[in-house]
Length: 253
Image (cartoon, rainbow, N blue to C red):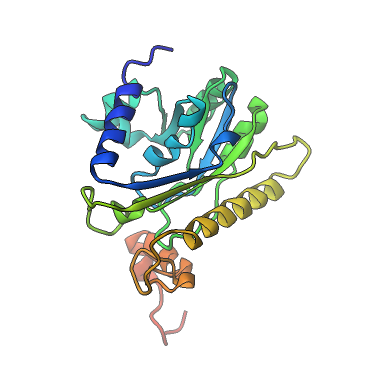
């Protein structure tokens, strides 16, 4: 597969990170195989997660093919870049096509990146996750590798102003132990185990982060921040009409 677009995009991103003096820390990168397929499953706290999660594979000299919603590929600027980097479009009304493309890429020896929460977590905790990456790994016979990313949400996340040129922001990327889904294991059990591992990695990334001021919007509530609780975040994520239909406190349901 010709790589005309991906390498210069990475070089440009790294040059920008250096200019902004972002403090990027990667741990566990040796767990990403130097050859063969694998599913890299990351938490999702920002619009930049695919950039930083992909850096976890750089020490192994691998490029990650991320699954992203089709609308990104329809963008006149981002679309050509996404296609040039051979990422995988996901049409949520016809997900079988993306699933099949991902399995083919895995069998061809590619690393496929997936955000199993599907959308950004406003609470900065791991939401309920989808089983898709587990089924992909099982069908292709490849390992499943959990990853936690923490810090990019300070630059650009859902519901907050973009601060893409903010300097000196620490970014932590932790790579967990690979999982090997067994065909006979109940899917629900493997999904719960993957979410547990992702949550543990994220909690470690948060607790070892070099900048932990109290009361800031970008910290989860259980660490003294003012981010929405998981319940509040779920309410914010519901369609506007559904939120209006909910009873107010004190009203009958």
